[in-house]
View (tube, rainbow, N blue to C red):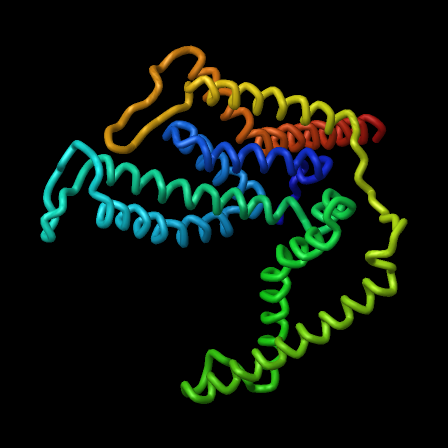
Length: 305
């Protein structure tokens, strides 16, 4: 993951940000809100993981987008605008096609946001936030979040070690590759069981679950976190107020209908854009400040010499 200044904010602030953005994306079905959320999610993925990871996300999202967009009109025939009739005799409506596209875009947008969430909200931040409230559940969730990336890294380590002794799963016949793959899987399962026992013993020795146990933390709520929190509350409150008054209402079935376009709706879209684009703008601002400090330091060194 690239350097992400937004990740250095207090865990409560970053958690609130993802709750607002993902919640608004899932419950506001206005196409403008969905387009804003998708664009900002992809921009944040690019900022976090670089062009290669963003390209990979887009490549595996495109088939998912096409499949999801085609499934809805094939099975749902609601809508008043009939475009054609399928061989089965069911109508193909414009509303069902648009709703299928909306559902597909919503799915890949939420996946992109959760990809960013998984990169920013690490297990230690999650335990810090919910360790005292729900210690057992927070531990299970934090271990679940790190399960896939940790096991993927261990599979690469085991595969490289087995390849050095001639057990490569990418060469040889089908039976030989299957035998090598089973060997790697067996080593991985053994490692996972041993790691679970070591983790349990380590937690027991550290007094997990004992009453009065304290936890060390480096997180401090400073002035920057306070400013970001106020910004999130302002933008989130404004968008929520617009939604409660029906300004972000949009209906796909049985007929396309949305709230009349006005200044309040434009303001809600602007606040939602500011909310979703906060990490990218935040990181860009930090990068510009860093370059300015480097330039100032270089000029001072030249002056001294």
